[in-house]
Image (cartoon, rainbow, N blue to C red; front, side, top):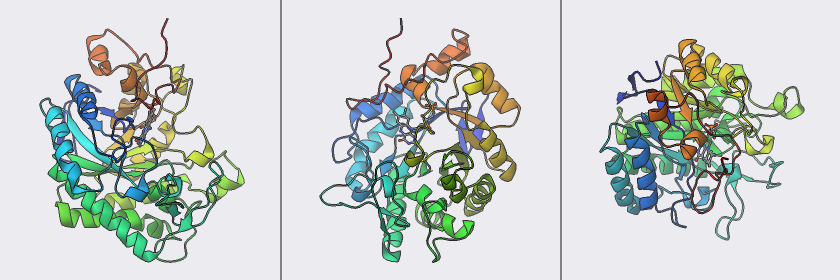
Amino acid sequence: MIFDPITVCNLDLQNRFVRSATHEFMAEKDGKPTSRLGDLYEELAKKEVGLIITGYSYVLPGGQSDIYQQGIYEDRFIEPYTKITEGVHRYRSKIVLQMVHGGRQATASDEYPVPMAPSEIKDGHSAVVPREMTEQEILEVIEAFTKAAIRAKKAGFDGVQLHCAHGFLLSNFISPYTNRRTDLWGGSVENRARLVTEIVRRIKEQAGADFPILVKMNATDGFRPSSQKAEMGINILQVMETAKILERAGVCAIEVSGGISEAGGVTIRTAINSPAKEAYFREYSKAIKKAVNIPVILVGGIRSLSVMEHLLEEGFADLISMSRSFICEPDLVLKLKSGEAKKARCVSCNLCFDLEGVRCNFEFK
Ligand SMILES: Cc1cc2nc3c(=O)[nH]c(=O)nc-3n(C[C@H](O)[C@H](O)[C@H](O)COP(=O)(O)O)c2cc1C
C-alpha cells in the first residue's frame, strides 16, 4: 500500500512517503535559500520520495526562530526557490513549502527583542515572556502568510504547508495554554483557529482556490498527562474540532504531530528502537482521521516497513511522513521497495542537528 500512488490536494503522488519538514541549516543568514537546499531536495526526488516538505520558512523577519533558517518574506527569494523547484520537478516528486512564524519561540534580536504571541505566557523552557499581539499585528501576520504563499506559487511550489505545530505562532493561537485572549482570536476552538482560517481564506483569494494548502498541527501540547499545564492545554476533542474547522476552511491535508518546546522532548523523540515505540502520535492521527475526510499524514518515529503498512491498512493515517530517516538515508524509499532493507537505519539520536547543514552524524559500527 505504501508504494501505491495516491492523489492528495489535487497532486498525483507516486507513493505515500512524505519527507516531513526538516530545518536544514542551509540558508544564508538572511534566509535566502542556497543551492545546497536544492541539491538535497533533488536527491530526495531522484530517490522517489512522493512528497517533499521543505524546512520551515519564516514569513516575516521577526518570525525567525533558528540560524540558517530559510525565509520567504521577500520577493527576492522567488528566483532561488524557482531553481530549487525546477530541480525537484525533473523527477516525479512534488514539493511543498512549509511556512512559519516563530511566535513565542522566535529568536530575540536587536531589531525584535521580544517575541510576540497571542498572550503573555512565560515560556517555561526559555524563560521568555512574549508580548501580546495587537489586532493590527494579527492582520499583518495574515498578510505576510498570504504574500509568502503567492511567492511560493510563483516559485513553482506545488503547495504550501502552514506550520501549526511545535509551539510556533499558529500553534500558539490554537492551544488554550498559550492563547488566553478574550477577543475574536481567543476563547472558543473556532476563535483560536481563526488566525489559521483567515490565512487560508486570504491565500485562496489571492493565490487561487486550487493552490494546495496543507497544515501540520499539534495533536497535543505534550505536557505530562494530568499535570496542571496539560489540563490547561489542548485536548483531543478540541484537536478534532480544530481539524474539522480547518477542513471546512479548505485545508486539503493534515499532518499530525505534537509537542511545544516548553513540554520538552515530545516532538523529536530519541531511542526509537522497537516497533512499539514507533509512530508515537498514532492514536492522535487515528482520532483526527475519524473527524475529517481529507488525507491525514502521520509523523513521529516511524521506522519499519511493517509498521508503515500497518498504519495505512488499519486506518491510522493515509500517508507516512519521516524526517530523520531521510537525513540518514535519502534513498530509503528505494531500499524498502527493492527489499534491500526492512526498516530505516536511523537510531533517533538527534545528532543530525548540525549548524553546518543537517546530516547524520551517528557513527555506525
Ligand atoms: C533536524 C530536524 C529539523 C526539523 N525541522 C522541522 C521543521 O522545520 N518543521 C517542522 O515542522 N518539523 C521539523 N522537524 C520535526 C520533524 O519534521 C518530525 O516531526 C520529527 O523529527 C519526528 O519525525 P521523525 O521521527 O521521522 O524524525 C525537524 C526535525 C529534525 C530532526
